[in-house]
Amino acid sequence: MADLLAPELAIPFRLVGNGVAEVEQDSDEEITQGAILVLRYEIGERPAIPRFGIEDPTFAMKEANARGMVAAVTQWEPNATIEIVQSIVQSGTLDVQVTIDTTEPTDG
Image 1 (cartoon, helix red, strand yellow):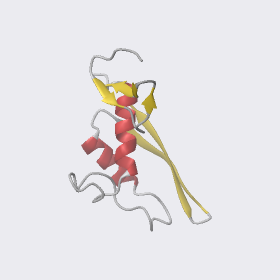
Image 2 (cartoon, helix red, strand yellow; image 1 turned 90 degrees about the vertical axis):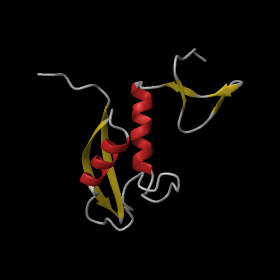
Image 3 (cartoon, one colour; image 1 turned 120 degrees about the vertical axis):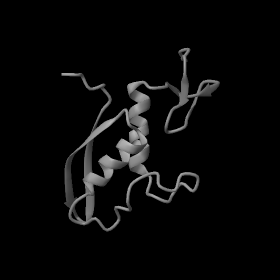
């Protein structure tokens, strides 16, 4: 395991050798996993942070709440920029493809 200056636990949590998997704080990998976590939680699922996550997508049969997803990631993982690539309903399942950009915007 590499020595990290500012280690964060890797998500999903997993054991590696005699320790746990870690990622460097503020690395692309850590920012991406933060954005994914926001999208995996429904608002209210985390009692310590009740507004964390996205609205319950269970009954979103036509399309995903793209604005809500973007707003949630912007609020909770401001170093990530997401774009909803497509939202497809097949056999009653909503499949959302998301791209996550961790590069810092350039002044121009």
